[in-house]
Length: 238
Image (cartoon, rainbow, N blue to C red; front, side, top):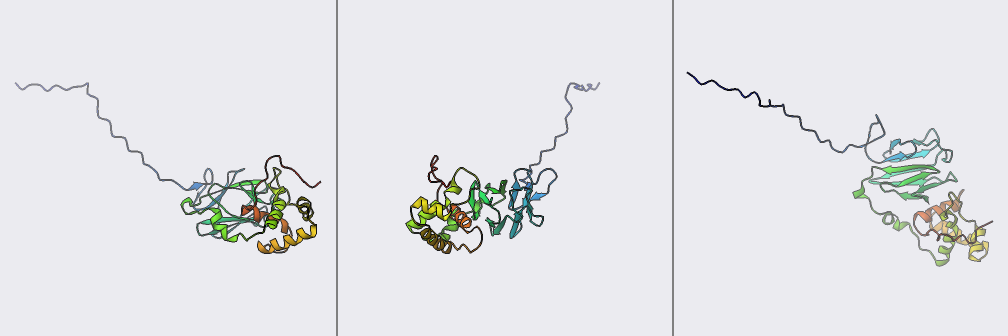
C-alpha cells in the first residue's frame, strides 16, 4: 500500500509580487494646477502665483495690454520694465516711466543682474525670479565692476545726499533735489548742479525726465551708497 500524501492546508498561499514604485526625476516648475511645465528662467507673480516664462531675449513688464507680462496693479506703469536674457544671465531694467520705480529685494534699481529667488517689485507688485542656473551665476558686483566710474570725495558726498531719501524707511521717495543737497553739504546750489552734470556724464545718464532718479537708481544698484543708520533723519526738506 502506497503511503497517502498529506496536504498542509494551513500554508499561506503565495501572494503576487507588488510592482515596484517608479522614481520620477525632478520636473520643471509648473504654473499651478493644470499648468504646463516651465523650463528656463521664469517670473512668478506672488499675489496670484502665476508663473510666466521669460522670452529668449527681452520680456516686457507693465500694466499695458501689449506687454509680455501684464500686472493689473495701479502702481505699475503701462510699460514699466524689461527683463533681458544674456546667455545664462538675466537682468532687469527699469524704464524710468513710473514714479514708483522698480526694486530688487527692496532696493531701488535702474539695472541689475538677478539671482535665483530675488524678489523684483514693479511698483507694489511683487514677483520672484526662478529657473536660473545657480552654478553659472557670478556675483553681481563682478559683472558690474567695470561700470563703476572713479569718483572724487565731493562727488561721493553729493551722491550720498542725493540717494538718502530713497534709502530711508519710507517707500517710493524721490531723490533729493539740488537745493536739498546744497543745504545738506553747506554749499551753493550752483556748485551742486555742476557736480550733478559731471556725474550724469560719468554714469552715462542721458538727458530726459527723471534724470536725478535714474542717477540715484544706478548708484544704489552699484552699491556705492549705503542705507543711513536707523534714527538718522536729519536735514530733511520741509
